[in-house]
Length: 573
Image (cartoon, rainbow, N blue to C red; front, side, top):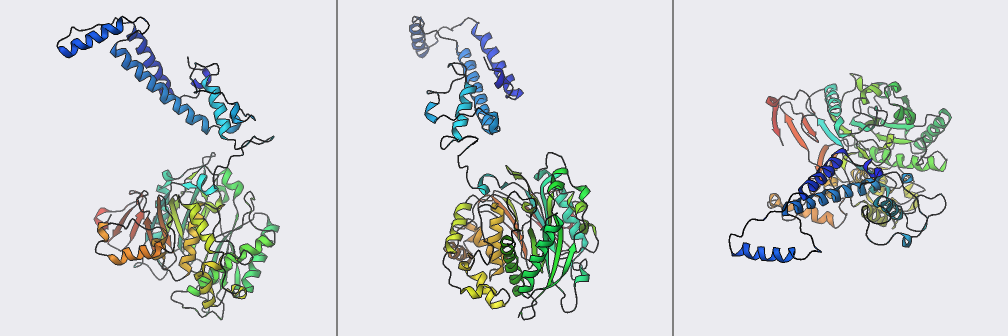
């Protein structure tokens, strides 16, 4: 007999299966057992053995058909039992009976199903409670078991991601068409994301594009055609927001970044769901001019990009020292979605279709770009937050990094040897000096100067993005940086037989940097190039198409690009 408490938990199909098999078993067991006469010597031996067994009254023998049905019933009950076990461990802990006894007080012997004095349901409750205890629970404590680092147990994605790029059409700053196609593709990725209980708030959606200089024309001049642009999430509280702004401006001025002004991002808060609206930051953009003494290459703008990168990490330290930093449960978040003179990120805790409704800039025809990276997030076992939406600052990541603890530990181990003089770390402007800072990993572990590079309190995507961003700000080209971080399976690969230089590249970097392994599809851009890469096992596949006009479409799956005529495609794979 199945206890009513378990029946309420079983799916309908499980109940029907068990009841049906038990009914058939009962009917069949009432049928008389029939035997056919032996037809050969083997059957004769079987008949003798059967007669011997039938003379033993203590062991009743059912028919073969009954035995088969009973076996099927047992399998069905075991399967249902396993399903219940899995379900119980997913229940809220306050639903289960909490015991403060030691594990030795658990009932001994195998867990039974309606046979022992304690039914299986109670035994499973006891076992589940015991599994949440590393030591006897203190008063008011639910569990003292270490479940694992947050990024491994709460930050796992299975998202939709892709990019659209066309460098040959449009004017200097691209076209609005590329942005519109990217937003349409993001909308078609809705099935790859998730929404909140209110049905409107999303786990996260966002885009990365070139900076829309036509839209920001009032902040440009002949002496500063491409200023640095920061996309900043600031507190909703006006007093706290003004205090944060003041710290940001002071850090920029100290590092010779002339502050050009703030721009409040036009948004439609009514388009948000209740959950997203309750946590939405105040959206602002900041503009800074490159330092006068910066000997920069205007073509690559590497020196200016390094200064912006280091100043952003310096701002985080100053905000923390002023008591204005972001804490895990603090709604007044301060977060730089991007701070660059080449790329900008618009993202939020919204569904894909809501993103252009919330950010009115995305509807403006003056928003032009040559590429767009789009990302729709699926957040597993974690509460979505505005900063956790993607793309990150340089990467859009679909997947998981299963080697995260080792990767973070190795980065931290290298940070312990500091050889650059302390006074050099305070100069975040000189191009040669900033190059030394980002090139030497041992300059990253100076928490009173720069924000820590990696942190296990961040998600796996955020840590990967931080290391990848550091490498792109050094002398690594973005494709090479990603090849060394997430290498392909190059050993004994037939396609690389005639390319020994690629194998040598992987072997060389394998001795310098540990692979960030796990199922992953990574889309990236450092403002100078755009691309995508798979993990070594190809567990997060992607598709691409190239059209006659030179547009490259890359996406998690086909069908997300609307009105893409097959006759216009010249290459795909």
